[in-house]
Length: 429
Ligand SMILES: CSCC[C@H](NC=O)C(=O)O
Ligand SMILES: [Zn+2]
Ligand SMILES: [Zn+2]
Image (tube, rainbow, N blue to C red; front, side):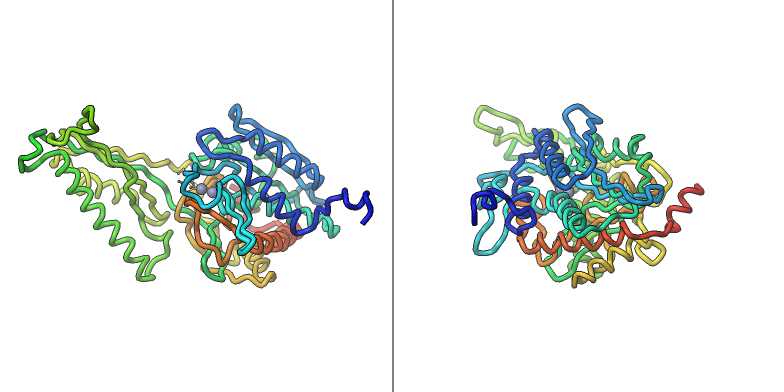
């Protein structure tokens, strides 16, 4: 090849597509100091190369939200919002096989190792790559297609998607359907989520008489706390057993996991070893399915897990519902978006799993709270779930397949020329 052609980069070559994904993955957007500015600049450079309109919004200083737009031919129709978060959870780099922000591609397997490779920089880039391909094919959307790259999801989304969903910018977008993140599946299926569990945090504290480390006595803080922990573990087992027996899906049971334990009397060498402390506490992450009754959990805590009769107190923090809209998105023929997504996956020879409740939380709840349908979907089949784990990876072939799936989804959504019933009933409310 001559000099001029060797200088040109083929933007559509698979290697180039993977390099762009790696480019996004190498930006360290982990807490405590996510580099949002660099992420925003990267996304804007992508938007420019795909010729999408772009704007950056800082609802909170330093927390950049990038909004892209692909204008449709009938802009009065409700728009499509493709959401993804740019932040990722922290890493323990020395416990990874490859540095978590190097986006190392293992040549023998095709796996790309990076924090965010599954959660969820893959999705953000796949939306863009799908649009790049659709544009190259000459496709023009009927509806406006928006892409939001939001900060803050991993710490609750209050300074990201929550403020965005409450903003005038958002109202003016007239969004009709939101796509947000899902989970990988180790088997052939692609998973689709119509709701998510409510998250709570629980701290229980136990008090009791202090005493000599050598003395056996009842009602110490440690003993009081351990009775609770045993009871909590029995409940945890009962829920987990339902999942293990295949009677319930992951998102259909209440999960409770201990996340910290705190007690002991400090001494110069660590902790005083011959002293039973007068206070002990434990913290738990709790997730409740949308169908469960939160009041009954609260009663259980007051009666069994932190009874005042055992000298215990508790603090339960649960986010309040902000509206009367159901936090469930319809997953039958009443929701054309669900059907279209399913068909699009199948048209790419993908198998679709049962509709599911997302076990953790996502930004989708802020959109559902506004009465909008939101579907959780990340196109990853034959992939172990490594969200928030060491050695998070995505296979390059799976990534490329996901781009084609989004190409089908976006094409179907952006060609859908009806005013779905959902939109009409919302307009009447
Ligand atoms: C409940 S706000 C925190 C959101 C977080 N989302 C992803 O992991 C989660 O813990 O589920
Ligand atoms: Zn996520
Ligand atoms: Zn996450």
